[in-house]
Image 1 (tube, helix red, strand yellow):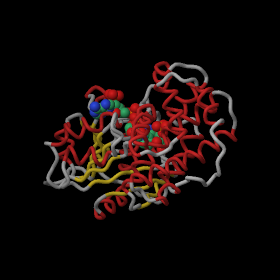
Image 2: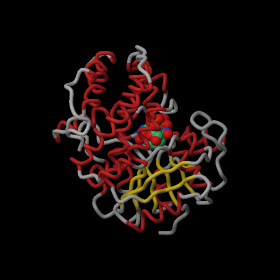
Image 3: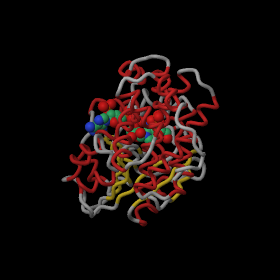
Image 4: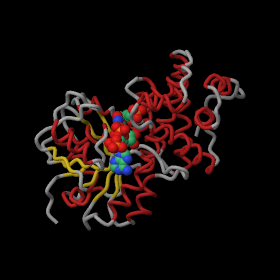
Length: 339
Ligand SMILES: NC(=O)C1=CN([C@@H]2O[C@H](COP(=O)(O)OP(=O)(O)OC[C@H]3O[C@@H](n4cnc5c(N)ncnc54)[C@H](OP(=O)(O)O)[C@@H]3O)[C@@H](O)[C@H]2O)C=CC1
Ligand SMILES: O=C(CO)COP(=O)(O)O
């Protein structure tokens, strides 16, 4: 089947739109699909996502589409950028509409709700083993990416030709540096776990702790991520890269992160529902905390920060009590059980 677009992006939220703008700015015909026809009509009329990316005008080669069948027929390259809790439902809708040559990449950060399975397993369960798969992960705030500010990201997948084609589509010498990585599992895990740590960093800052505590949390958060990574078969080096340390530092330290802002609000005493409504966009880390907690328990991996964030979000523990529990843990060597 002939391509009408170079790539189709599924998900017209802040990040899907930012990636579509970035691809279109590289001169690639990019089709952006959203599930809400009114929203797509608004984007088409304004040629801008005013709410999420104010002031960023859509390039001419960015096309808008509300019909999933048309969107999936338009290109064999499909970039999925929907929140993790609807990832399976979007792929289920897409399943019978995919082309035989479709190739699927996602920038969704998270795991399967309730089970904590990697999205690669969710994807394979739904669409089978025959389609090439890939994941994009790294420190990439949508607003900065859409504004063309310098950004770096990593990509890994099951098919070298597909990842190379994606690098060609996404890479821009002035704006976006794309690193190839061969750790498909590690890239998926990093994006989910850093969201939990960003909530933890927000909680710490929200209750009035300082830079020392925040930095300790990032550092120990990296240890927890590496430990879980080892248990699921990721490569340790991955977590020193964009999808590990990079995304942890970004989201734990900058208030553009919705997960960090969510933690900040809870740390200052807001309840979960009010904090989520105030943020007004997806707070992936809320669900990711449960997913990572479930996965870590299933594999018997010790993740004390994840455990405390889980207790704050799902068991009514106060942020202060969670911090006390972390500080009063048994004395140990820094490198003991590090990996
Ligand atoms: N924003 C960022 O800076 C970054 C985000 N990401 C990841 O990208 C993913 C998407 O996040 P982001 O774009 O920021 O989230 P937003 O909250 O900005 O947007 C989510 C979008 O998903 C749409 N959506 C909800 N349910 C469905 C569904 N069933 N089918 C199709 N679309 C649906 C929403 O539509 P509606 O509003 O109509 O419900 C909305 O347009 C997340 O996993 C996030 O972690 C990764 C890196 C950076
Ligand atoms: O993943 C992100 C940046 O890399 C976006 O982080 P938040 O979802 O916390 O805003």
